[in-house]
Length: 167
Image (cartoon, rainbow, N blue to C red):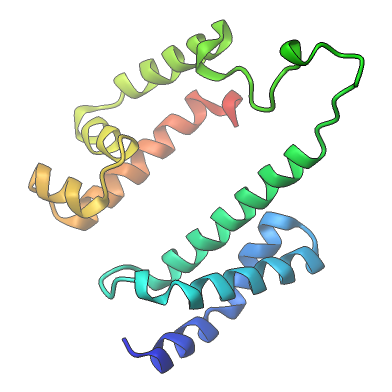
């Protein structure tokens, strides 16, 4: 894809980008800023786009990642530390997680819910969660790509009611 085609394709996604940005930020001005940041990042990283990848998915993933990074930056900036506090006992942002008793219970509950999936759904879903791409899963399991995508979709749908308290 040449530079002009790339730019045309990006411009044709502006409505999708605006809608997704609004769903992330819930603010028109922040959504416009996010769209602008995303457009610049996509144009600057044009060389990283592979022609066999879903362009819209790639662009919206870039947008989501920028939003998440900006969110973490804001959280870090808003962390206030009292000068009278012992600096070695200040709770860190994001402290907790899997190494806490609650995190261990959460992980075991999630693992149990995945283990209860039918094998036809569990195997592709587990591979996807482990970081495999759809096409890698399709090759490994010798399944059509569409079948892999639908099984992962159905696994998510089956897990949602079981794990709704984590959302």
